[in-house]
Image 1: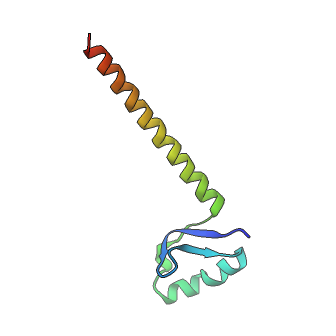
Image 2 (image 1 turned 120 degrees about the vertical axis):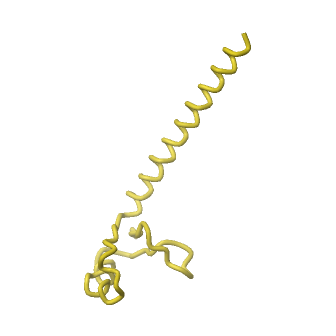
Image 3 (image 1 turned 135 degrees about the vertical axis):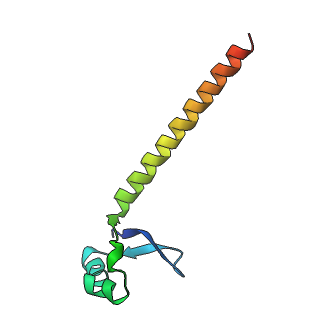
Length: 84
């Protein structure tokens, strides 16, 4: 079963983001009329699949590792050059 997560809406008491079992369920509970009923229609929520969400997290994690690696390399070069 593939779940869909909402990037910015945290579901209290469920310890995580809102997840929908399928597209039909998501459409039923996120239609414009229901969002307008709770004054949420102007929020324009962005729905993504879990695989897409994880891909973005992995990409940002990889970028973080590269940046720390580059900073560490610069620090090592500076320490080696200042020791001479």
